[in-house]
Length: 299
Image (cartoon, rainbow, N blue to C red):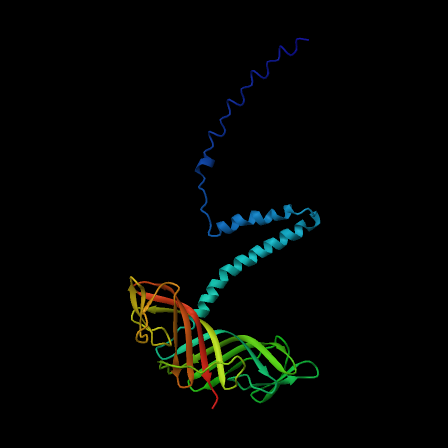
């Protein structure tokens, strides 16, 4: 059977040699490489999360784990994007609107005994009722609150001070009530004087209202740190130089060093400020820290 010898089919088929298809298709060569999007690094992490389900030996839980990890990734990405923005806005809002007006805003938790007023307000906690609600008096009107209900108040605890409380009831019992939320204090007619401040007791004092709020200040050269008599002189080889310090105190601060000031903002309104040097150059000084505002409402 010389059949196979007379069939030079494979030799006479130069198909592959005569098909320069790839050479005549310059499409791939001219396709521009897309630029990396701003979330390129985040997208690179997704395959790691998507393969995480393969590591488990239980196939029944693989889909559930994958879905959970993806949701955690999305939530974390959104949180990281939002938190710096909201935090910066909250802190920067504490900067003064004018030389004689200061604004302080931050989180707050307050506890009041049954029969007493929340310091600085006219909200009085009566007690826990028989149907397990918290009875309070607001502007002389009775209200019954449960955990999670609002307990807001707006008014003037002292002359020249406006206060706005946006808070919620946290827990309550027959003896006491605890609320938490945010406070906004606006102090007008500021004329700062260094000196002593009222002592803040560990226990609630109805005659003393204390709020501790975060602050972030950008102080230009020649200007004062808001609420204080301290000024920024400028950058030196020894660090940021401050003015207005007590005699004999070193005026230089390196990055991360603390700056403190105590004194009176206006009659019966005091400030205890502790901040740290975050950044400084020839033009400005950035500081961030905690401002303790004390209102002496009693007597």
